[in-house]
Image (tube, rainbow, N blue to C red):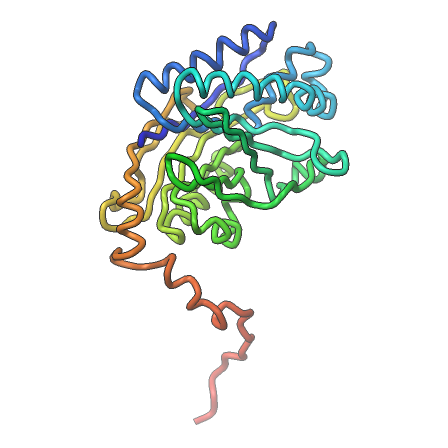
Length: 296
């Protein structure tokens, strides 16, 4: 299959039709390059708050709730495009109302035959929990699709190895991200590459790029698209299948063979995924032992 992962800029939108045209353009561009799986970034849906005007878009909590109210319409649009172009799409994540009326960060996943699923972010960053008041959502899932088994780790979640291990049955992990600084981008990228190493799978990372002075939530964004695998037999020695250009809006494309993933898992130079359980009993907290010169 071919994966397309986005470095996606947000726009000021004056009408819903403008959003429909933008999304259709991005999907059409990826499918023109024969992409089968399209990955949009974390919080890319925040541009929808501009449809309610500058006062709403410029207020953190009002913008969050504005986007919440538009996500069913966004889902209808994504389902239409997935069917029209015959592709799987991970839509840009958005704040949505989850269980008990709490707002969660959710990425919706769409298939070409009308399939629809979602993955909620598990662990909130300091900004999300302290200022946005975003809550953790439902548990992790592996989607069994025509393209293989696919899991999703939203941004910060990719930095936690036990979350990655919970998705060890996935052939492909999708990591939609939103990072303000270069350091933030590299934290998520290093996490994504580490998950590819541990699980001996392919990880596709998408980013928001560009400045949006109208928003206190996503005003500055740094990143690029990237597709990573284990640096082992059948994969690049660097583990980098494809990477875009920093802060340049574009799709980044990578070819993925499921047979290569199966092969490296069963007969790679190393077998990280298989040997994971050998940490049991070794991963406990180490004792602190005094280290000092002893008398002869």
